[in-house]
Image 1: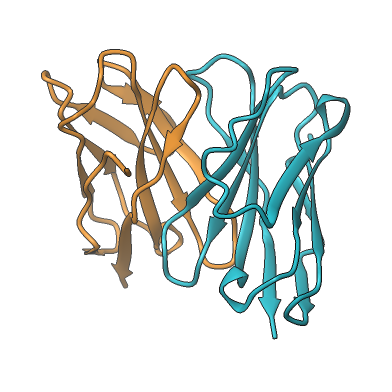
Image 2: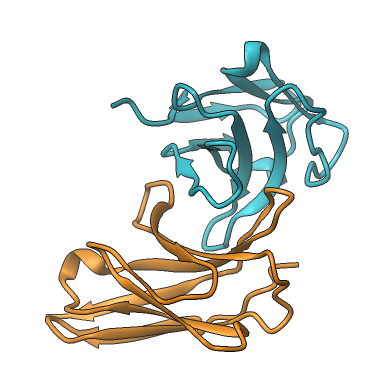
Length: 114
Length: 109
């Protein structure tokens, strides 16, 4: 079956521009996560959606970052007024509701800020 | 707060077993232990998870210490395709995953 899909796979933009990153989770998965991975580093949690509950935004690094999830499925991560330190791979994952279930990851969006 | 500690890197010879350790001394009673691995330019891939008992699947085995403060991922016969960064992660009842920096495994032909 289809896995987690992220688009675009690569994005290059100029400093100060806004970017939108998209994630299509596995059908039926109610939990959706966004992570950021800088070069050679581990994964940094950004935000978590679970069903219709209020999202856990505790990992967002600044108010330039926001995310939404429409209809409990597709999610968009938006970065406003991008800075060079925003350059990283942004990973999305989804999982079934039960908390002992594994996450399934997309291959990420590689974001480069010039 | 990653909550887990792993060696930065390990090496193994091809076709030999590999034991990847992880310490999680602050684990709570409801935290599950998950292992993922990440190949270059790919998202992490689920390997195995457990709570208290040892677990086996087609990819690996997970040995969990009796006090649950440490665990070991066992690859029974390392292949070149097993070269990756391996992450040991705790998942709590709040659905959070805490990723550390992982262990970079090199498999020597």
